[in-house]
Image (cartoon, rainbow, N blue to C red; front, side, top):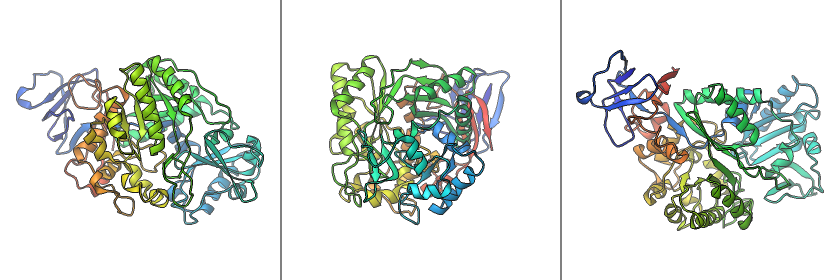
Length: 523
């Protein structure tokens, strides 16, 4: 048994504690004060030495397998790793020099708003890296891919290729594809790629999880799983090789021209893996001006992409809902949110009881939050987007809508369960403490704020990164707080996040991470 004492302890269940005791099963058996602590034998003491003990962070929306591939086999086109377009080209060229011609090479992470060229890459940029390897570079948002000429050819994309429903093949003034494809059109590229072997995918997932443990993340939701990803997760779970507890969201409708619908997955819940909630995409991304909004974007003049017709989304959602699956739908713009909330209301009318999620909830219109609350919908926004993607928001979001981006204060005040998350690798830094900072001060990377009135307290932010994630995945009974009977998923921080100034929160250090009472990371 372990006894944690002599520090600050935040249980996140509304109760105070001077000490936490963990049994050999990895469960918390006591959290309270010394005066009422039972007598335990064969106990090992862990002296906090003035540090802070909190529940493990729960990243409620993070693409674990995508992050893992970026950490293991992909070209990293994020920030400092690729500060300009020539550097991105060099990164692909160096990888191509080591691989036989014809080998697909992928990368991700560029953000045109942060590149000095202030533009998207094109097929011709990537052709400079290699004309003999098919190359595909995913934008930071995950809603756009730039492909070189060979990759376009293998995908069957030319000037005569029509836009798929819910997708865009970007073309130049002569009608030729530039190499940039958006939303469902990405499926034309991804389906031309060879499948990633289970072993390589599993290695990437494990690498991403080791990265998460260093950040104090002990639970996470991976929100875009194909049947192949579910298979790999089941393999890892069977081997006892999931150091982070995972809530997986299998996708129903993959990208592409043909409307392929994956079957409902087998429901499965264990101590480390949960598969009982399915995923839909209603629109695109805000930072790339493809989320569906009611007012034209600055610079592009369009209003984003709505991926589903209303009846089609309702039919697919009802199939899942009627079968007992919870639903998580990506909806960012006010137009997409109107569609999704209306669908959820109809599901609730037909068969109440299940609580569904909306991922992002970036630009709700008046009344949206109240309608979500009335049917028990949970919100999974990303405060860290304000910091990481603020320059994009100021560039693209219409001035009339910009003050309402990510109104997390309003979400909480409306009574919505809120789970904060990173959506990594959409952002280059998935540190929950950075996400907390952004939820408090709402500043971008240049320290310019977005509607400060929508800031929340440190306690609310920590709750949203711990209990909030547990509630959103349906695991509030076994994690999210330091409460008797829950898993001892815990983090020791160098300081107290509830009294640390927002600007200094990212400087706090994760000293130790425990999962089920087992020390899995130590600085």
